[in-house]
Each structure stands twice: as structure tokens, then as C-alpha cells.
Amino acid sequence: MSTHPQSLTPASEGYDKARRRFFNARVPDTTPAEIYTPKTTAEVASIIARAKSRGLKVGVRSGGHLFFCFSLVEKGILIDTKQLNKEIDFDTRTKIVSFSPGHVVEELATELLALGRFLPWGHSRTVGIGGFLLAGGQGCFGRGWGYTSGSWITQIEVVTPSGEVVIASKTQNPDLFWAFPGSGQGFFGVITRIWAKTIPSKTPFDTTVIVDSTDIFKPLLKWVLEQTEKVPKYGVDLFYLTFRSDMETPGDGEASDKPRIMFVINQTVYVDSMAEAKTLVSPWDVLPQEFQPYVVERVPLLERTWPDLWNLQEKFQPNGNGERWTVDSILPDPKISTDEVSSKS
Image (tube, rainbow, N blue to C red; front, side, top):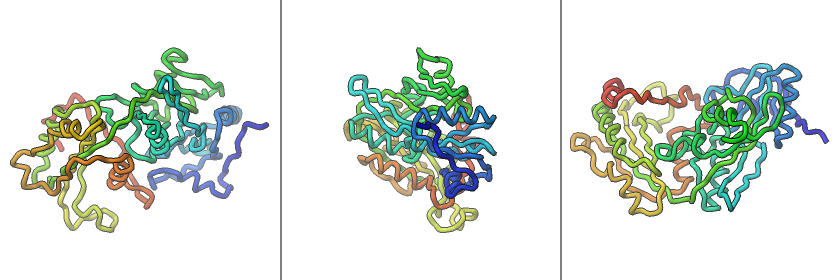
């Protein structure tokens, strides 16, 4: 029985829909010669062997959240992992879970939470786990628990450029495992399965303060950054953003009739009780007197579900309506002081 799956070519029905399966509507005109949606590791190995024999370059896609769509390779091959190795297996003895790079956050979270387990997945429900981990794994509560790729993954299954299927961990093929976190589209193979540690699940809580920062942006930003250092790191996520006061007004977003700049301060905690949550969010209980007249809204500490948190994420980073995103992640230089960041913003 053949292990080589069917492909879509530019002449195939459904080709362009498959080619454009990305979070960002800003998809380039790059045209792969073939698009595959393999279901097994053996099928991936067959695709790699075919690419090697024909001298074709290969791109790999999981959730399609990379804004620049680098998995599209002109006249190359696109491997879409959305149907790959879709079983999620949990070892009740070791508490290790194995899953596909093509699973999205919501799929993995739903399975693990039903088992009372957790690992720091991505913040958006539609993020593909493979791409998330190869980008470093800037997951939930990473301030204390570290990047998911470096702290939580125990081993990976990889199809190498030669078509060989290998396991990589700290003890097997350690050089390949070392290269895995943060390598992105530059990784030396196709990841086909992932194993990760888990911990008991807890309850998410969050609180939000929205401030009109139009006239106080720099001093407010400096205070927020200073407060950040006072917030405990473990089980805590901090989320800061700005938006225009007419964000929800229909239009193309190129001009604003109400150029007030709102500053959102949000803290999410993952704990066992409301009492514990209140302690962790206490640095935001009282804003300095100079900022209090500018407070637009304060959302009290609330118990949340994961769908609640995903819905909030999607309010500020929507997709599916032709949104054309231009910026993904911006990482600050740790050598730059709080004063420098706030003064140059």
C-alpha cells in the first residue's frame, strides 16, 4: 500500500484555498508546485523523499499564524500538518502528553483540561502547536515558567532531509533537539510528533484597567514598567496594549475622528483560589493619584474560562475578515532601561 499522499497542484480545485490558509490576509502570490496534507509520519517521509529526488525545496505549515507566510516556497512543496498524527496520547504514569505539530491550541487545551492537566500553550486558540514551539514557545505564564520549547518539551519525532525518521531529545540526537527551540522555518527537518511535560490544571482569573493615555503616555508607561517588576512571575501573564478610542467604528482604520489613545493593563493569573489571585494582582489595586482622573474603566478580578481568555485575545487581534497584519512579535532589548524605553516611546 502506497504511503505517498495525494497532492494539490495549481490546476487542482481547492488549491488556492489551501495555499491561502493563513491567519493573515496579506498572503503573497508565491505558488508551490504541490501542496500535501499528510496524515502519518510515513507519508511525510515519502514527501521528503520525493522532494529530494526532484530537487524541490520544502515549506511546512501548522496553524498558519506566521504573518509573513514563509512556508510558501515558489515552485516548491508545501506540507500542511493540520491532519498529521491527530491522536493526542496521555501517559498517566509519567504525565507526559504527545501530540501533533498540526494541533491548534484549542484542540490540545480541550483534551488536557478534560484530564485535569496543563502546559503553557499559546495565547490564541487557533495557533498551531508546531509553529508555536519552533518560534520558541512564548506561551501562557512564560515570565515564570519559561519558554515552552525550552522548559516543557521532552522529545520530538523528526523526518530529516534524508527522509530518515528519528527521535530527538537531550539523550538522543541532542544536537537536533538543541536546534529545535526558536529555529522556526530554519529547522533541519519536519517535526511529526511532540512530547511534553504537564502539570495539574488550575483556574484562570484576570483583571483589567483601561486608561486614556493620550496626554500621559510616557509617565504612565514608565510606571507600568516599574510595576511589572513588582508583580510575581509564576502563574502570571501581563498584557499591555494601546488602541484608539474608535477601534470598533467601521472603517479601514487609516484615519480616526477620535484620536484618543487607550492604554490597557491586563493581568491574568493561574491559581487555585480567588484569595490567591487577589494577592497576585494587588500591585494594580491603586493607580498613582496623577493617573486616576484618566481611568476609563476598571474590570474587577473575575474567574475566567479559557474560551473567555481566547475571546478577549480575538477582540484585539481579529482575523477572518480580510485583516492584513504587518507586525508579529517585537522583543525588547533587556539591556535598555525602563527610563530609556518610556522616554523614547
